[in-house]
Image (cartoon, rainbow, N blue to C red):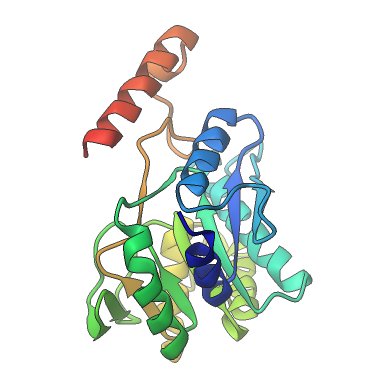
Amino acid sequence: MDPEIAEDFLSVTGSAIVINLPYRKDRRAESSAELRKIGLSLDHPQVDLFAAVRPDEPAGFPTIGTRGCFLSHLGVLRHALATGRDRVLICEDDLDFTPDMLSRLPALTAELDRQPLDLFYGGYEALPAGRIVAPDLVRADPAQGIGCTHFYAVRGAAIADLVRYLEAILTRPPGDPAGGPMHVDGAISRFRADHPDYITLVASPPIGVQRRSRTDIHAVKWFDRLPVLRGIAGGLRRLLARRS
């Protein structure tokens, strides 16, 4: 395992920031294990841990968790801006790297370094419409929404513009035509549509997927509320993830 492969990737996409609720030690341990697979760790100088936000009320968002997720991503972007970073890679703590990631990363990194790029998605819900610009790389149509935010990068002026865009959403009421409180992936998709000059590249197929895990965004299932059953459910999710 050569950590330089992952380090080269981070030099193009930005240092990785892993979003994790402090009480979700299970996810933090799983994130640590995933990073070790590619020669990194939570102690690596190009990796930071960000304490996710858990608000007390939804304040116009669909759920408390939805608002917390939105504020957490905004917090990471604000941090990047305040510390003078010109690129940042945002990872949620339920990110799993695909088995072929390391073998694909050198060529993908080289292409990302050559291509004009403002946003990059290493993982997503479904491949958005777009144009193939290189092997394993698609330039997404700005009008095409991209679901999920478990593994994406923002670079250059897009960081400040995205911060301002998300902050404006917080000032509007739910259902506002200009965009009120919503899931953060929807907000970033609206941002891309409203800023068509920003270039979004997407790894195709993805190099990161969402791990099956107890949610912090939606209502918790009954079997995740009981400690014993929660442990069993977690074990089954890990088993299913290995088989998928």
